[in-house]
Amino acid sequence: MWDPGKYLDYADLRARPFYELTARIDTDRPRRVVDLGCGPGNLTANLVKRWPSATIEASDNSPEMVAAAQAAGVDAQLLDIHDWTPASDTDVVITNAVLQWVPDHRDLLRRWVAQLPAGAWLAMQVPGNMNAPSHVLSRELAARPEWTALLDGVTLRDGAAVDDPADYAELLADAGCVVDAWETTYVQRLTGPDAVLEWITGTALHPIKSVLGDAGWARFRADLAPLLDKAYPPRSDGTMLFPFRRVFAVVKKQ
Image 1 (cartoon, rainbow, N blue to C red):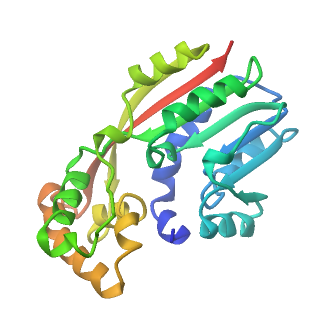
Image 2: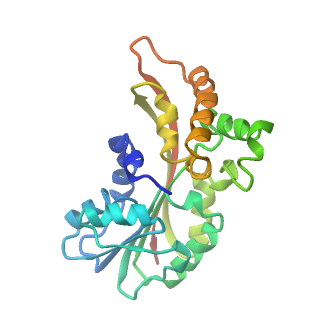
């Protein structure tokens, strides 16, 4: 179960890649704009402001996220991303921090490009930090004997979950697109106790939190917190600097 409230912690920091992604979409009057994996809808609302004449289509596979988006005024639908097919008037497709959860997303990208009309834009962003200490330490802890039985069947993403910008550029160019691909590492200033743990609780640790009861989750947090504090020591002012790499691609179908 996704927690929209937890996801919206650090909302400004989570939103910045979205704005930098969509800024590279160079079209003024798209007919239909699609937000795949819209989450709680806070960023989808900005698409309405940017393209007021467009039909805005939003979806997510989490009932909790869809409910939060609808409560925020976004006409979001519950949909598995594999089941989405572009309508004939789709001119912009955005998938922001979603495809890292989809192991076969490379095949989806090829299929979507093939189905989109000429001149359509596709913009994607995925976190590229699965080999950062925050994620490596989480995987190592989950693999300890005291946790393996409780977390049977839970898979935490590793570096193979996403590609480098050059790999996405090759894939999408071969699919018939003009490609703009890049990466950015944001050195994020986090505040508060267990700040890195709180950040990854809203995203990377979701598979673990969803299968552990309250007591088990509290124990896992207690085991992980000191490991993260050592990897990301607080500065003298009490803040933490948390490098976060993200991978982007914005393409136009020829």
